[in-house]
Image (cartoon, rainbow over all chains, first blue to last red; front, side, top):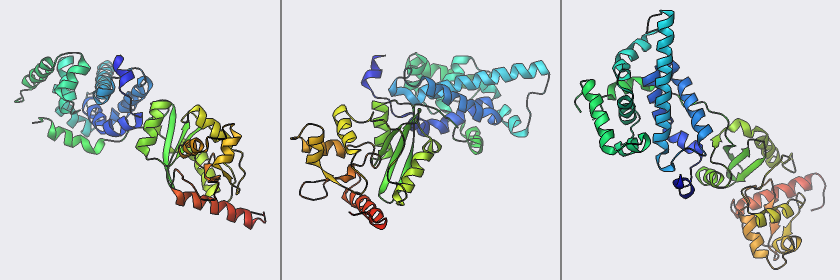
Length: 156
Length: 195
């Protein structure tokens, strides 16, 4: 990307210091608090591994949050498959059960709606940045979020 | 309005900073008798920075000139910190670790290598260093190269004074330079060496 040669990347630690809290929120909300730290660590490892070539320096925060969101959803899906196979109950501890109630509806949303919704309300990413990171327009980003809110029966 | 505010507040107690290791450069801050410093080593263990700048300045310079994959990992700097502690306690005369001058230009690197040979507790002048690098008229440029030394103490630029005997400048401030010179003189005198 041409941008890479024009805008310098900050030291990785600065991105980590600024974004870790929101990444932890996203992974806790979507992967469940017990597994959140391991998922967040994996997301940060991947971010570090691909830092030099991948990101647009103007959207580093959104880039990391998108990566963490995808990983948390993958983790959640894998865990659901495992639970179905073993026939164990979906929720294990009380904290997990509370999280299930709060976030199960969000996890049931269509992929793009869910990604946009979580980035916006959990990761605190702007509509413009969501559009940039999802490769779509600001109008579409707004629509994905309002559709998601309608499915959740939350007033936009 | 954020419809998730309540649910997010419930997550707060679970949040922890990540545990990430690796990257190309590890750094930490180091507060000592001569001031606040930033130390950095490369992943292959070479000392990259021992500088008086702020964390933001030094790490951005590393990101620009070496690699942006920079992480705060104090444990990777244990050996350097231990040697600096010993030096500042007068129990060590040089930092004995591999280093890299990747943060210095090629001219500055040449100047700094010339300073490496100035012995503990002795001094030289900007003009002499200029002669040593075959640029006898460049003592001002030598001064600038030393002022930007990314490896203070490791490469002892504090042992270079002005030809008229005045202290000259120092990245950590003239006071820090004087502290280091006094330290070395006192240690040498205590062990019976002539100044």
